[in-house]
Length: 204
Image (cartoon, rainbow, N blue to C red):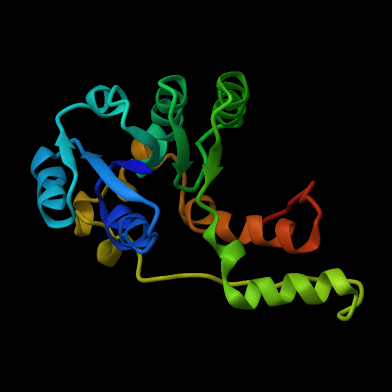
């Protein structure tokens, strides 16, 4: 199965591409990035083709599915375009900046019959899988409170364009701060482990 990468920044390079390469039934067929040279360098390194437009990649009938690894404000647009072109989509978290965008993404997936998956990878950590098992069996008992932390060095050290040039510091492109961009992993984890939904929040 051939997959395409849309957005060739850090998350694509350290997570999506290596993990696709580890799957024996998957071949990376193509790459698109607004920086064509970045996409071309990856194609030379790992095989596949660098495309000069996202439409060119999506029009390639050999590409079965795509990873959407672009800035947050473009998640919905790129995902919807990919779904409507007939591709299955793995979209990076956070799903989209607005609830309306998220709803539209899911509705397009249902209408087209294509799979949409959001990259909430914390569900698959071994410790979290064990916690899920213990909670489901009732061994832990009723959960009364849940405390979780998660962090890293920030965009300065993480982004492919380090320092203040990173899109993470652009309010329009990032669309949200650390709580929603990084904290979404833990919000999802709470709901996943407890089989419940957060219905109200407070803050100071």
